[in-house]
Image (tube, rainbow, N blue to C red; front, side, top):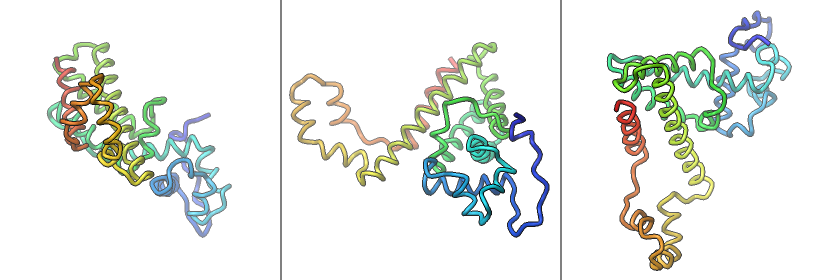
Length: 229
C-alpha cells in the first residue's frame, strides 16, 4: 500500500462540507485532546465534521493512517523550533518544544516509543536533531550518533510519559503527588522508623517537590553533558 504521505489528496467534490486530510487531522486532534485516543473513531470525527463516515475513507483508509496524520501535525509544531547556530541550542529547543507539544496533546506521549514516525514533519524534526547531535564533541562516527540519539530519545520518552501520567492521575483522583504522599504520612512514618529504608526516608522527608519544567531541563542538560563527554 502506498503510504498516506505519498497518496494525492482526493479531488474536491461538490459537497456541502469540503474535506482535506489536514482538516480531518485537526478535528481528530481536537477530539483526542478533549477525550483521549480511546474515545477517538472515524465515526465520531465524521459526526464532528458533519459528513458521512464513508467520506473519510477517501482520505484515510484506517485508524492507523489517521494517527499518522495526527502525529505528523504535532511534529509540524515541533519543527517550528527551527535550527540554531549551535548544536546544543538546537537540541534543547527541539526537546523543549516536544515537551510543550506533549503537554498540549497528552495522547501524543502515548504514541512515542513504538515504530518510528516517518511523516514529512517527523522526518524534518529527526533530521534536525540528528544533524545537530552529529556536531556534538563526543560524537565521532555513525555508531556514536546512533547511541546519542538513543540516549536522548529514551530520556524524552520516559520523562514525557511520566509527566503526562502524573497529570492524568492527579485529574482522575483529584489528588496531586504532594497530597498523595501526605495522605500516606502515618504509614510512611511507621515504615521509615523501622530504619530499613534510610535513603528513601531522606528523599521523602528532606527532598523538595521539584518543579517539573526545571527538572526536565536539568536532566536534559545532564544527558547532553554525557553525550558531549
